[in-house]
Image 1: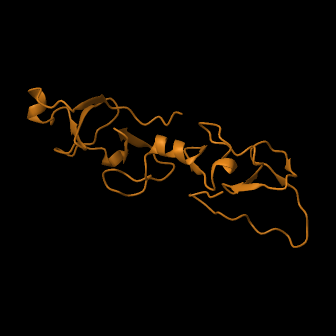
Image 2 (image 1 turned 90 degrees about the horizontal axis):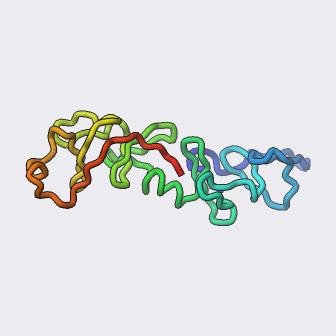
Image 3 (image 1 turned 60 degrees about the vertical axis):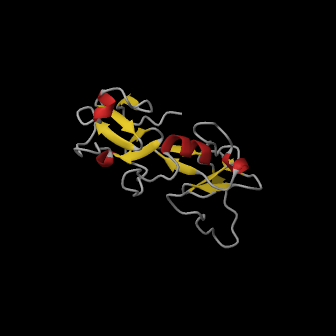
Amino acid sequence: MVNPSGSTQPPPGGAGTLSWKRCAGCGGKIADRFLLYAMDSYWHSRCLKCSCCQAQLGEIGTSCYTKSGMILCRNDYIRLFGNSGACSACGQSIPASELVMRAQGNVYHLKCFTCSTCRNRLVPGDRFHYINGSLFCEHDRPTALINGHLNSLQTNPLLPDQKVC
C-alpha cells in the first residue's frame, strides 16, 4: 500500500529473526501470510479499510490516501477533497492538515477563496456567487446577475468544508 504523505516501504526487519507485528487496526498479532504496511504501521488485510465506504483497501488497489485523520480509497478521496489535492485558485498543493473551502467541486486554500473583483477573502457565513469558474462576493456580483440575465448561476451560502462521508 502506498501512503502519499509518507514512506511506502516498511522499516527493515532483523536479520533471521521472526517477530510478530501488531495490527494498527485491531491491535492483534499478525500471523497471516500477507500483511499490509501503510501510514508507518502494519495491518491485517481485513483491517485496513476506507473510513467512508469500508472497502478493504488491500483488495481494491495498491494505494490508499490519508487526510484529516481518515484512511480513504481513491474514489472517496477524490469525492471529498477534489481531483488533485491542489487549490483551484493558485494550483499549489493543499497540506493534509489544512482546512479548505469548496465550491462546485473545486477546492481552495482559505486564503485563496476570494472575490474575483475586490479580492476580499470570503469567510463562513458570507454569501457568494460562483459564475463560470469565478467567485464573487455579494457586493461585486456581475450587473447582469442583478438584472436576472444569468441562468447558470449558483448562489450559495458559504460553509467551511466539513469532509463528511
